[in-house]
Image (cartoon, rainbow, N blue to C red; front, side):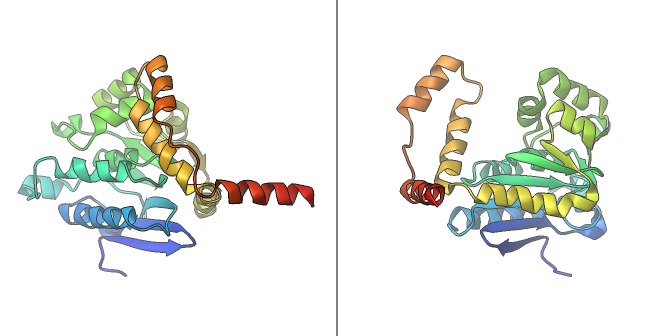
Length: 249
């Protein structure tokens, strides 16, 4: 087994990042975040990659922040360093999928929420247990969870520390799709290939557009879309040409 805490595997434009402490249910440590941050930084510079999948090795995505590390007092490079790392992941100009099976609790949920969307296996279980341990979120839960599921639902999950199943996560909008565990690998690949079939220029531009106009009123969002439009990509003519040529045959 690899000694890397986060591994990267590339295949035909897809980068698969895997949280790799299966013996500890991929509990999150400073070391894991450091390796995740390095991989994300490298992906900013890698034009060969058009889509990223983040998942966990072994039985689950991640059981959450390593409580032993918290109790011992973590040494981080700077205040807010974990949050900055997830922000780097969130702003990556490529689609990022969190592929979740098994546990996805608290800090792990904060990591998954930094992806563009969550693809869940039937076995996935989600929850925010900050309140159970007398903790408060500092990796982004208070900002990303209500944007994903709505304020009242976020409050319910945060106040109760309730664990929810994959079907409930889908119902409230936390997960975008749920598939049987036996079909999980195939589903990850299918969704990634659907994304990779489309223009990387459009993906990057659309991410920037959605980020800039999130929570704006409609009129100012429409103005932003017009005034800051990034135009057409360098692959537009080739894509249209390929379509028209195919339609003539």
